[in-house]
Amino acid sequence: MAAQKKDARVFGYELLLDCYNCRPGTSDDLEHCYSYLDKMVPFIGMHEQEPPSIFRTPRKEFPDKAGLSGWVPLADSSIVIHTITKHNFVSIDVYSCKEFDPKRVVQFTKKYFSPKRIEKQFVLRGKHYFDT
Image (cartoon, rainbow, N blue to C red; front, side, top):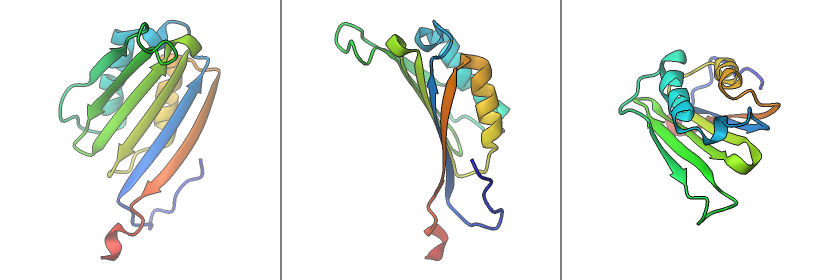
């Protein structure tokens, strides 16, 4: 992830993480994933509007998508998590109109899920928002 120029005026910043082969059990642990969302917020200097919400996807109804989905609404936007238990896969989206350090998010995520591989994408959102 290349650092973005400080003088770029954009509406928001979005970090997308795909975490492969996470530590077994972490992608199906409601408390663990809730804790991740809850503790990530102050770690990156954000403010939650409400506590995180997290839900289990029923294994019987959706065998290929069984896992967890959750999010925490932020005053600055949101953090979203989706997991697929069968593959120890965790997908995370941090979106904010306030700048944050993507490296800190990756560091925190590695600590929580111990993935063997992470794919990262950093996107500048609303590049023309201030043109109007």
